[in-house]
Amino acid sequence: YAARDTARIEQEMRQAAAALDDLDRNLATLLDTLAESLQADNRFRLAVQAPTEEGRAFLVDYAARQMSLMRLDLLLIQDRDGTVLSAGHLRGLAGSLEPRLVAALGNASGGRALLPARDPGGAFLALARTRPVTLGERKLHVVAGLRIDQDTLADWGRGGELGLALVWPGGVFATTSALAEACSGSGSSEQSVHRLERRGFMVRRQAVAFLGGEGPADAWLLVGHDPAELRAFLGVLRSRLGMVLLAAVIASALLAVLLAGRITRPLARLARQTADLDLDRLDAEFTSDRRDEVGHLTRLLGAMTARLRDGVERLKAAEHRATLGEVARQVNHDIRNGITPLRNVMRHLGEVAEREPDRLAEVFRSRRANLDESLGYLEDLATHYARLSPERRHDPCRLDAIAAEALAAAAATAGQGVTLTNAVPSNLPPIPGDPVSLRRILDNLLRNALESLPAGGGLVTVDGALEMDEDLGNPVVVLSVSDSGAGIPPGDLDRIFQDFFTTKPQGTGLGLSNVRRLAGDLGGSVKVASQAGRGTTFTLSFPLPEA
Image (tube, rainbow, N blue to C red; front, side):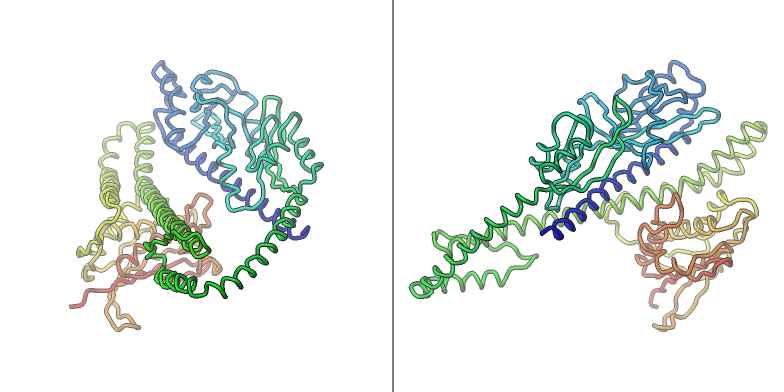
């Protein structure tokens, strides 16, 4: 038992620690996104750098709005000296001093810590992180957190057989009453763990930094159970099972002799009913007024069928939620692609307004086409995503025109020394498809190509041709995007189209997986060829309609 129990408790400890790490990664991502939003919000920047009565009122309410948008449970925006400029979870903290909080979080292991907090609903526990944000000469600190409660711990322990607890100075969450009782009481988190071990519990634990009113301390995420109690229960269970099996054998022998016919016929009917069951057909009803074993079996089958129906419904609901989550990630990725050119144009206009205000109108006219192009792209995306299940469009699409639009948008973000070339022939036959999807494909590939170029610049070329499919013998339109960048390591070529695979520190890992999915939706395919240090070529093939 000892070896098996040890392996099981270590496995569940790893699962609980992984759940905590997942929550921390989600918090870090939300914090980075929030920091980018702060730096891009000119009204926030003005309220911080040139405060007015209206600006101070805007700052007080700012954290609450951002906390709601980001689905955070705790949010503080502090000045360099620790003054709270805005507090989302408790507005009354604005103007107070929290000079040690940022330093304590920064010194915590892994940059994260459990933090007791309070909102209008009462006290709660949050997993918190901090991140600096620079606005000109002002340096701010953002502290964000996600709530951890009894339900959170129950989700982390779901599917496990042992007890899970989170113990901190002055509090405990536990999934079993035995763990809750053993961990409760006065003393530190370490003393609570020692009480468990003295009572004979097998315990595995992981330290989590805790920042309370008395300074930094350790909290413990732990898994434990009482092996003596489990062995006693198994002994009683084996004894009772043996008695039940013996009784069942005797009863079966008697029933087989005395009531064979009376039992066989109902069992045959049950067999015929169950033979028709599958996951798509669970409408059979198993009911019986009999008070014998056959009646019990019938009602048991009825209960099992009802649970299966409920499980199928939950599975369908889970698939639906997963689909919605995927759509949300794709929308976020595509909108970021559309916003990047807008941000660059606005940054350029801001620089001109500051350094050469007399040229502002001239520069605005020269960059207006980029603004109109990006806004039009975002409007097309909004129309495209307005329908959850849009019918696939089959409009004639001219690849040379779509490539020209995508290259014009990419030029707004290209650095010095970058040459963008549209080599798609104007006489290339149009393909049936969705122009928004084709534009999204090119935007993703061009963005990757530009990011692969060295600091000194390079070449990015979009080309096209009409070729014959060697396997099917049918004509196909081929569209390629080539760059002279760093290339893709051979070990990554087989994984670049997988969801969430990325080698970029801030990447989402969705760009190339979206390219493959969109190409497949249009009936096409995508392949890649790359050579380290010499560049990469993505080739898309689209079939032409039969004449």
